[in-house]
Image (tube, rainbow, N blue to C red):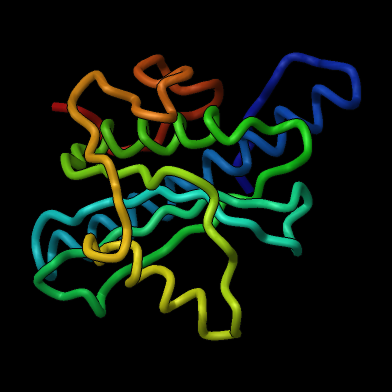
Length: 169
């Protein structure tokens, strides 16, 4: 159990802040573990962030982060961030972009638009690999200081709690 103390709030803002903290910590753990594995196995990975329809998600959509290397596409790893009704996709994408910047990932791409969800049970695995096929998707690489579609909030400090992300050196 990890304690992330916060100031007391009314019920609805507390639930929203709790979900955001849970999503951020989950993303930090995923990115830290995936980067460690990919960097040890094949070198520096590429990151792709995309928005998808997801009828099973509470808000009807999700953001997906996939990490892979062109040298070993089968080692791709993916993470899903469900969007809740009060969430803004740009804020969640900005959190993911900032996390990747903090972990020194240089090749970050944000796919424009909303993509359909997986059509079959194994569609999620195929979607992770498809994100990195530049001939099928038009991704816009981010440059330092450019938040692209996720510019809202990008570049600022991470919100609250314990920061166990990869540190800039």
